[in-house]
Every structure is written in structure tokens, then in C-alpha cells.
View 1 (tube, rainbow, N blue to C red):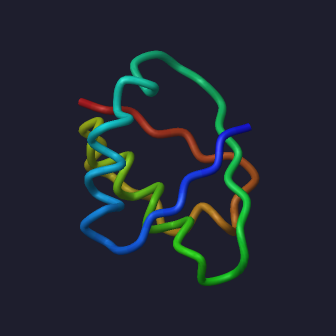
View 2: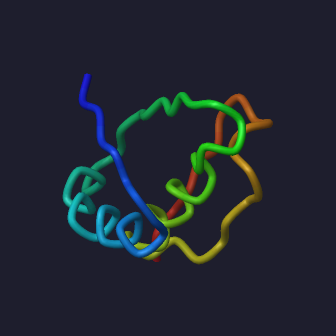
View 3: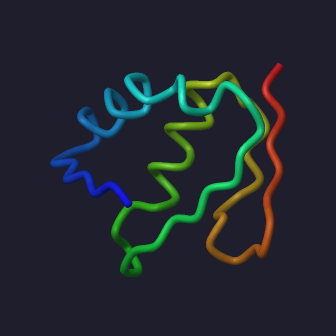
Amino acid sequence: MKHYKIENIEALKAFAIEHVAQFDAPKCFAFRGEMGSGKTTLIQSLLSAIGVKDLQGSPTYAIVNQYCNE
């Protein structure tokens, strides 16, 4: 398991762009963190970096979310 400390939104966007190659094939990811820690913002940044345009709200309240990039 890897741990990252991301200091701000700009660093979060840079992290998403830097790690976009990890999302080049279908995979399953689990995100864990305190409420308000930025999980949804991170996931939205990652999805945006791979070209997903139709975000389905917060992933916190769903068991599974599937996203397709165009």
C-alpha cells in the first residue's frame, strides 16, 4: 500500500496527471479516508485526467461506480 501526502488542490491536480498511467486499463481501486479529507476531489481529479466527463456525484455513497472515458 502506498501513501501520499498532498498539500493543496494544485498539488492534487498535478498528482492526478502524474499518475494517470495507472488508469490505462480497467482496474478496481478502493479509497479510504476521514470524512472531508478530499477523497471525492481526488477521484474527480483522476477521472478528469483520464477524460471522464460524466461524473456521477460523490463516490462515498455508492457501492460501485463505473466510469467510461471517451
